[in-house]
Structure formats: structure tokens, C-alpha cells
Image (cartoon, rainbow, N blue to C red; front, side, top):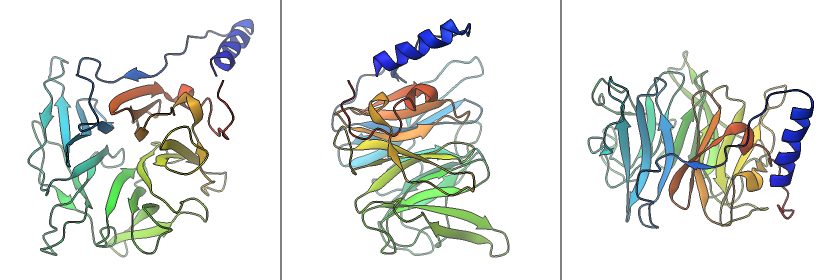
Length: 295
């Protein structure tokens, strides 16, 4: 793959086009201590203004959300646990929406209208100047009583999430939902046949324009225990079957928790529990990898 990238740069230079060397995978927080296996970080997201960063981090059997906020002087403040969101030990997979600016995430808090249950459901909340407004769960059309996770939204307001509801293929499956004003509720659709696998397909990311989706999966071919895969829409806006991102992103270690910057130019993901960034153009270089030796 390194040879392929170098050859491409030489060709562009020969054509008189300005090129830059590949940046490669870089840690988002090089100043933080690298996490171990019991405090892995994943699913990083940043607000549209670029002033709030939120991510998931494990603490043993618990998962929490953490944030950093940028001051008026442009300096990042300290890491803070978001302890005010309702939960029973699980806050996970945050994503700022480019459509409404709110933070979507999953929590196993007891839903007020049910008064029971510990399964994770999808919630959303507005950021305020120094904190957060009151979080609210989505409707029962989304939060079914199964485990709903990984909420992500594109700029048109289409919502994607995963669920292990019995209507799926098995494990956690990916679903698409759109808001219907007439019903005053969400309308949920299955992904096309063959899109989901029999095992878990989880930790979603979607490009702001809604034309590309990312997720981790156990399916073959794969380089590690789980790999990050991607899929795009065709000219009729139909989702095509997913393919492996290949060795430009995936390794023999755990690569998971993808997310996309709100300008669509950067892929974020977790590698060995550490939050990483990679320019999208580089992330897609080996898209469609079929199991051949990457060397």
C-alpha cells in the first residue's frame, strides 16, 4: 500500500499538480496517556463550531462520556466526565448532528414513560454555553425495548442507528429513520438485503451528505478481530453492499468506533483503545479490500 501511495504522488507531480505527502494515522490526543484494555476510548465527535469534543471511554464495566471545551481564547480546557446525563452505568457512542446541532447518544437510563428497563436507548441533548440542557429520549418508534445504539445523523436529518430487535438479521443491525411531520414521529426502514450480517454491525458513522456510512463488523474478509467497513449510495440513492476499508485503516488489532468530521474530510476511529484521525482521502485508498495480502 505504501508503494501504491508513492506511485500516485509521483504521477501527480509529473502532471504538474501540487501534492503533499500522506499524513497517516495520528492520535487525536497525543498528550493523554494511552488507554489500556479496560479504559478504551472510541466514538469521538466534535460540535459544528469546533468548540466541544465528546467521546466514549470505558471504566471497567462502565462506559462514560467525556468532553473538552474550547475557551474564548481558543484554548482547550481539561477533560471532564459528563456525569449529569441520566444513566445506569452506560453512556456511549455520542454524535453531534449536522442537521440540528444536538448531541445524540445512547444511555441505559430508565425511560420516564416506561419507568423500568435497563436496555440502552437513544437520547439527544442541546449544548449550552457552559453545559447541557435536559436530555430527552427519542420516541418508542426508535426505542423499542431492545438495545438501540450508535445514533448518527446526516445534514438532511436522516437518522441511522443499530438495534438487536427481533425484526433484524441477528446481533445488532443497522436501520435508517426519517422524520414524518404528518405522523409526528419517525419512520424506520431496514437496510437493503445483504447489508447487515448475522453478527453485530455496530458503532456507526455517516458522512454529512449522507452518501457514505461506516461501521465495525465481524464479517469476512477481515484483518483483525473486527474491522471497519464502509458503504455508499448509488445514483438512485440506494445503499450498495458494504466493503472492507482495508489496510489503510484496519490492522490485526481492534479498529472500531468510526466517526466522521462535520466537514467530511477526516475519519476518526479507535485503534487499540486510542482515538485516532486520518484524512478521508487516505482512509479510502484501500476501500474494497478483498483479503489479499496488503503488502
